[in-house]
Length: 199
Length: 199
Image (cartoon, rainbow over all chains, first blue to last red):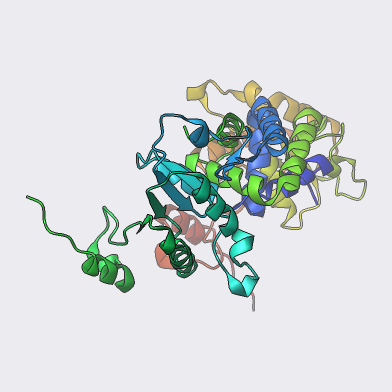
């Protein structure tokens, strides 16, 4: 109990950040107080504005303060591609690959044990979105986890009758790693998915 | 550029926190937006209040929103002990050892190369504080670094004529470690500072 109340409240509040425990929160609070008060105030302002101003894109459901997000409102994007992801951070990750089609953001993945069925993660909205668009391919980019695979499988079965091209992002060995450190499941996928060597 | 402006500003603002890079800031921003907006607003409020309300204790110079900090204003503490530390986080660390005397917080350590002499780190204020009090012992608890040692040495020389008991926190092997992993300098201190085994 050796910090004054305002500092203690700041330390407690910082602990809601992911990966921040008591020690880190103390270091953050004191660093801001001793070195960068104007930065601390800017952070407070940015937090308030974002928490109050950011909603969800009407079309793809990613986080956005406008009714249509940057990706949905851009007229130069490819309207024939739809990439289905589990969350807004995935949109950012896929953007960095150079993909320039459209997105649909689920609310996580199917998880029957947690009571998360197709309605909870937004499958009806996905069907509606596909009904409105003129997509030729739907890329299922859910996470390579058991739940993500099951979700991709469920969506693929649901969309099969529509005659769209359905694809799943490739599984294999990540670049820059060492083969002996890759787990067996991944390596099995990499072997099964091998391609003709291009000379 | 796939986050909307408010989210991008929040991510940039979070990066002023120590140890938070681009990826961590993204994760923090999206986690707050998706899971805990009220927590984010509480954090903004705690930041504003602390940045605007916290100053320094008039007596020991630790961070405090009151003119006298919790340690200085507590009448039950031992007025004969003064512990000199480099920063407010050290006050918190020493508090946890059960120490219940008074404190004096320097602004870091002597560092002539960075232009930090005795005035810059508050040595005159330390002398004034010792002049006001009735201390019988001054514990030099600067960091066990080259600069911290030099600072402790400087203060000890300066205070020597006052006839106070001057002490330095012990150097030795930390608890729970393995001897073979302890560096040579520490081990040499631990050997030189050995004590009679108490049965």
